[in-house]
Amino acid sequence: MPLVAGIDSSTQSVKVVVRDADTGALVRQARAPHPDGTEIDPAAWWEALGSALSGALDDVAAISVAGQQHGMVVLDDKNEVIRPALLWNDTRSASDAIDLIKELGGQAAWADAVGSVPVASFTVSKIRWLRRAEPANAARVARLMLPHDYLTWRLAGATGEVFTDRGDASGTGYWSSASGEYRQDLVALALGHIPDLPTVSRPAVPVATTSTGALLGPGTGDNMAGALALDLQPGDVVVSLGTSGTAFACTEFPTADASGYVAGFADATGRFLPLVCTLNAARILTSTAQLLGVDVAGLGLLALSAPSGAQGLTVIPYLDGERTPNLPDARGSLHGITRENLVASNMARAAIEGMLMGLAQAVDALVLTGVQARRILLIGGAAANPAVRQIAATIFDLPIHVPPAGEYVADGAARQAAWILRGGDVPPHWEAAAGEHTEVLEPSSDPAIRAQYESAQEALYGLP
Picture 1 (cartoon, rainbow, N blue to C red):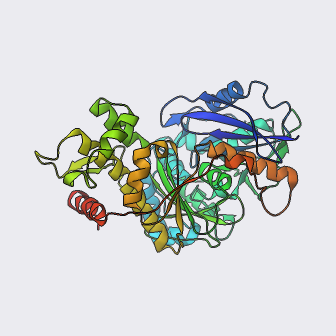
Picture 2 (picture 1 turned 90 degrees about the vertical axis):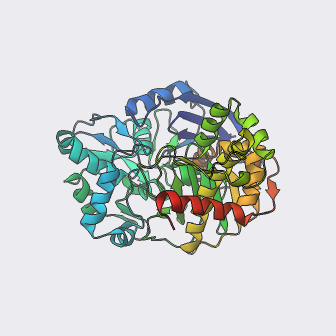
């Protein structure tokens, strides 16, 4: 029974799953925490991974790493880390993204070049920030990596060539999904010179071996790994409710959205993964629950006792600024307060509706790029809340499929590792990994919620 391992190195923790390569059956799993913050010494990821593994890979035949997208890891000519990595949720590079857009000739020029328009979270914006804020450090950059690239390189011995995959590379802002090539001119525009960039591997090709002799896959970004675990097909739209919120779809064609709402990413299989990301998702619920003196389960019960639309109370959930729409300096708002509606149940309902409306608008943006949406796959920690699932049916006008809770990012990395072992054109199908029956909710959308939310957006931020 060959075993494979999948690693998910996320903002908050590292998770490892070991599965049977043939059936997908879970053999064991482990996790370890990461320090909090928007920048981190990459050595902390390596230490956490070592703690989670603790000899657990000795019998594993293949390994792949999936990691948080966009993070900036910079090394000097001695392969020493220059400064803490900037993570995707570090928004100090917001003005740098604006400058880059202007310098290339506008949003359409960026969409044509790489399929996406820079925002603060993208790697290209972060390396411009480094050049502006820390020019001495910028000048020392000899190697530029993403978080998952760094861990893959460390697992390979940290001596040779650095590898990445097309999925994670497509989130940098300097690799084109359409052409499959780096735009080195954009690296130079942002950083001032062109450092060594990871080699972009083809899907399902081993890039190295570990010290235990396991094959090492190219890995991928977290969203791409989630799509791989779900076996995403054209017509499927994933809405993921984690720390951030994402909506993404599988397509056979690259996208280039000049509005900047949709990032034209690639996936981990050779297809494409247009994606919309919001900075705010599950934390909206935890913050509101804390305010109301309940846990998240209690928040859900309160929300279900309130009417749809929360009697006009509306939460615009930009608690940490926002990425889509691109409002990094915005803050959350409570709109439409009256003496009658300002009660705990309405507050709870408005928080859930606000979180989901941000993702509903994300799905709308995907459809405008040509995505043919047939169903919603609702995943992520917040999707475990029954109230979130029920209220989602009033927000989205498509059938909602809720797969069983799982470590989808780590599972996607494990599936890539199994694909490397078996070879072939498509990843293996794992019946055992599918788990329990997927819950299906038919839509019962309430257009009044959307109208109410969009009216508040327009009043507060002038959004159409």
